[in-house]
Image 1 (cartoon, rainbow, N blue to C red):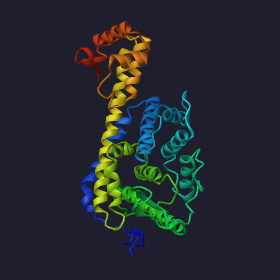
Image 2 (cartoon, rainbow, N blue to C red; image 1 turned 90 degrees about the vertical axis):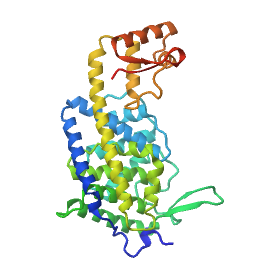
Image 3 (cartoon, helix red, strand yellow; image 1 turned 135 degrees about the horizontal axis):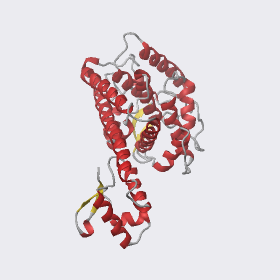
Image 4 (cartoon, rainbow, N blue to C red; image 1 turned 90 degrees about the horizontal axis):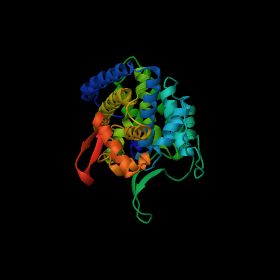
Length: 364
């Protein structure tokens, strides 16, 4: 069996852009909707929204790879990178992924070069001591394989080009990127970004971090095509169904026809835009909520309400319980009951259920 990069026609991917024509129109319509909604933000609101979305994407992109990050630490590090007040200490890996996300966001217009990718890799591998090469393409002699199963009987899902071939492959990748980005008869944006991700993943040029850098490249590609930071919730949506994502990539391991992958990619990107629009609406609602209730609640209640909003669009799974309130506010049972009743009375919280099954949800 030949891997895709061993085929004579590699890397000339086969696809029919007409199949994504409707998705392409919808993509640009939603991109305009996102830009229009954000135009209503004040400068500070715009920065805070960027912090929320970049934090979400950093945590989700790492989660796709099986790495769990502390969202508060990542958010604090992103705030620091953006010149905002930060008060939570972060671990090296959290600092690194925050640097990567902010670089993609703040410097999207910078041309994509080898040194860009090397810099991203150095950021992402911050604090790692187990890798031979950081900030350069892999150089090890053994094959770069994606495997599963136990040590005695591993299953090889994919084997990337050998290290001796990587620099040449990446030269060709970057040449294709710039030609496709700027060509007068350029391919549609969704097709371009989809191939950017797939092409990079098939080369797998680094010892580690290829998935996270590959998803950062999608945001870079979208942003450069749109002329502004894309701010899509792509990693968040992928993380909600990782198996489908990996299956879509795996299906391209031995063939150059990528119509099915591009169909999956387009659908996922449109869902990511929908999620971003929800997040924008949530941010606006949050601002209105606190403008209405900030003078009506005490310090304990404010702390809990802020914590509930920290959970984002999904909110507390199953709602807020009295025990949750006690733990967050460090309050007695009697004070908790009184605080919760007051919040329900003014409309800040909605009460559902009875007795031990009582749960509270934000009144939005």
